[in-house]
Figure 1 (tube, rainbow, N blue to C red):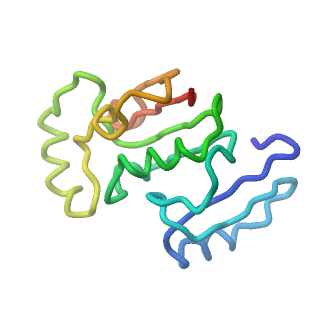
Figure 2 (spheres, rainbow, N blue to C red):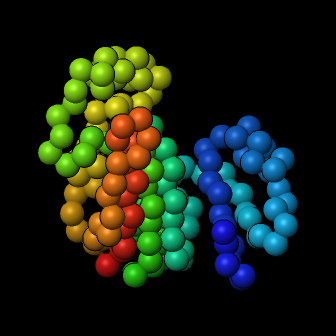
Length: 147
């Protein structure tokens, strides 16, 4: 839930996706602004947000590392980020199921065998929590604090 005085900003590259989001607004008691833009080149100043939510975007953006860096750029020092996506756990090798799934998912523009560490090299942030989520850990929830 959003706190009183909080403004949420939703961003998408696609006008049709923004129209779908707009159709669900307004949300009673919540201020939401929708912006068309590229997650790899965010149209916001440095450090203007308290938090960022990267929900199933890092693994589908053409340059996931750039998407992550941009998100960290716009989050203030001490701010937070939450990443929910398909990542191998640190040190994990892809099993048979993941390798099989990746044959099909890469055709759809995503990769089940990416590593968060490859997309987001250390520096400027600390991982507060990294835990397995859906589909026996195929998805991960990573909570970050920007330094």
